Length: 309
Image (cartoon, rainbow, N blue to C red; front, side):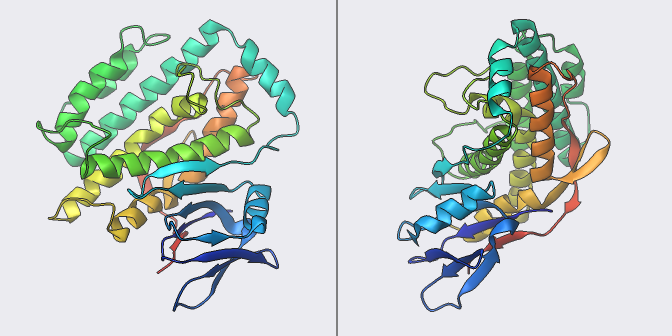
């Protein structure tokens, strides 16, 4: 079942639970309800929102992720379920004991997939040689030649123009990218935890203040989906992208509705991330070294996005 992504943005919203339904009450608007079991991600973009404790208990109980945003609409924090897998301790031990060569091979696979995905995005908007697919073939264990960074130097100017610079503190395109990355990263962290892995113990990312290093590792080949969506938005609109515009946020959230190719299957993006997380778990625990990663651009939407109006 494809779970819903819900954004709460009407000022003064109140969230509660009744009869296994998330109840959303908004000033001067009809009460809305959504079955708890149908929810995958809740984004609360209302600083005046009020919750009951049951909201957190019920949502976390079904494995949903809760994201809380700041005044700039970017996520400030998230809540993930802790009781994630019936053999979690065993998997934690295997993850800790995974050898350096295994971790380096996993990183090679992730970066090669990211470069291929970036090449697919560029092919969609400006067909012609960009060299990224060829770079993906050359990625070695651990990416010692830093082909990821070399690819980025080619990728961003070709996608958004020669004057574009990736800057996490800038508005416009950069802010839209930040928002998209944050919500997909949150879904990746949820999938990592659900697979019984330690999210802070990465195969490449090692920032001691980052509790989601492994999610950042697995997120790499999924980043280009956000880039693709943001580029589409820039082509559809003559004005600069602004996160104050709820239609922009809704369009970015709707990326979870897209169907993507992963292995021999076509899955909604949320399910694809879960499949990748499960394969990462198998690789780290020695069951199967082959990662299951996305291939190419989305093939079509599966509508499940909801946001209060």
